[in-house]
Image 1 (cartoon, chains in turn orange, red):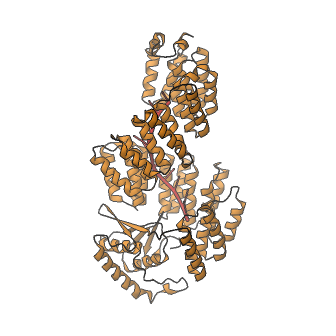
Image 2 (spheres, rainbow, N blue to C red):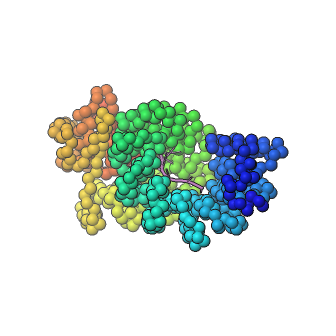
Image 3 (spheres, rainbow, N blue to C red):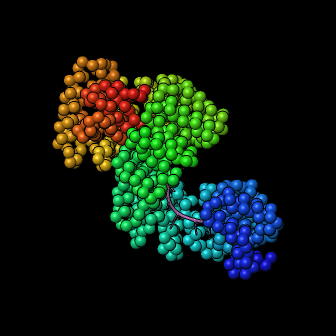
Length: 626
DNA sequence: CTAGGGTTAG
């Protein structure tokens, strides 16, 4: 074949001529504009009109099949490629390999590579196959191709790196990633912007935030994508404050944010409860026409939901023209988070009716909403439907939801039977859910078993030690408390203070236990004094001094209490008082908040790690352990 | 062949 002999499309005048035929010009245009479905139907009309495709028609059409993940159309095209006899053309070869990879058929891609002897000489073919292995998380295959291309004397370039580096984005392969980084520095391909950006992402995804940051700091010129890599890396690692800080730095260094930046910033606002900052981001979104970006909309939903503004979250959701599965998930989760399970379940039905196939994540939202609202049987029914109707394989996160579902309902025995009957081995979350149930239902015996198991899986998770210690406290088991304390000391836990946040006038105010650094410290402590003496007055004549032992201790330095005092101090009359607290579970502060809500004549809202608790007159609207 | 993105219980 004349085309194959030259080995390059551009240098071959015959192929160059192909590029300018009307069909091919149009095919290329459509592919560039991401109009993939249109490009495939154009290819079909071309065949119908009697024109035959050539080495220039295939790559663009194959690219469309890859983008839409249409393996059947791709295979048909492969057949046509063979009929026309241009399978040796590099451009066609790489498009075929890439198409099969993007459809998840890596073995077929490999066959194309192996059946064409010239591929082992062509860098682009190695690049296509390596990035395909990476995308399908076939680490060892990607690595062996990488080795093979070096053995064959084919030079590695930056595109090879871009295809290979992301395979190391899991902690297990960080070592490999580091050696690649070293290799790039030695071979001088590290000067390439894109390669460095991909290394930043790799470090961040492995949780090696410091390494990613160091690389970022060392880069003399930082582009938009460089900033985004480090900002989204911080966001994915839960460093929300740092995200906001970097976002400010980015703007002041003259780089303007794009939708990718704003998505991470919004997500961080959601975690911090920073509604005002989130609203400013929304203004930027509107001013720049990013509203049509579904990633941005989904992040906005989650931001408003987690800031307590359900109406706005729903407003954003309603105007998304084509809702993605993630949009539905975020909105359903939002109702669950606010205790409106029925609305959430209705929305779930709407989603099914609109033809969106549920995934494991939506089921996590729905199941956890059911368990928090005491809809045990509904939850179990949904778990069953998940397997039987939707053919989804439950993961450990679903099993732990079911244990939570049964456990919260007081069906601790059934929960244990369920764990024994699980087809997969229980993990930390499963035992943790059982431990949580024991806390609610004061089951010390099962708690000790669950605790023993849970710390095998997660020995460094302080939360479980605190939980076990609280269970012993409830049963007045002084020896148990002491035992847990010794374990904590042996494992070297420092008494890390939990912190609470309150957003006020566009600023997030962070409080640590015993904190005196806040500019309103004096007023906050004065308010705390006032609240506490009012609380003490009512504790005498209420039912809170019963078996639950709901008596306030004098550990008044806790972050929740400081945050509550600050929120009451600065709250605007007529509005809800919102306090966001962090993970740390403190019984004493629960009691305090309950009591304060009796004094304050407004709705008092507390957001813990994942949901909202609405208090009025000392009663919480949800059926949770509050 | 090609660097950065949304949802997720305890």
